[in-house]
Image (spheres, rainbow over the protein chains, first blue to last red):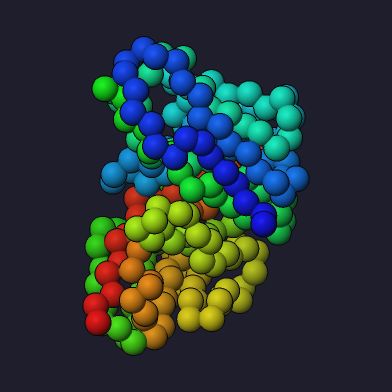
Length: 115
Length: 116
């Protein structure tokens, strides 16, 4: 089944404890992206990647890191989480960005709480 | 830069009736794409419908259709014969097809409740 998977689905952690949220897609998509969803703000892009070893900042990159060493994986790293990073996180992927290839498919979401 | 605005935080409709969700956007790009995503209580983001800006014809997907008014920068979603399973938050989104591609810009969302 074609899908985007994220782990963990739920995470409660404490301020300053490094964490990684994994994202993997099995559709051979070139483009991957991370978003956070907060009430009243919709979804905002954190980082995106056009291909392996190619990443760029979105609207709210502060406090996050990403890497794209393999095409299928795009982990989100919080080196020192803070309470304002409590949010619902989504990973998404698409074949590309041109023409009909830019429809993004989303993972199930990760609910992160930073105490 | 792109912006997307959904001015209706909440909407409700009776089962089997028709409802329209509003969305306006702003972009400096000539080539862009517009989307409606549905987020049910499961939180999964599900693509509802997609519109290419260079196409005049409004997109349709079964009971879902859009009214794309390019000059007015308006992209509303019409849901016909509403069903209980349509209860969800709906997000309007846009992405540029040119040099600023890479960012899907979302509106704030509209919570739709379908009543039996």
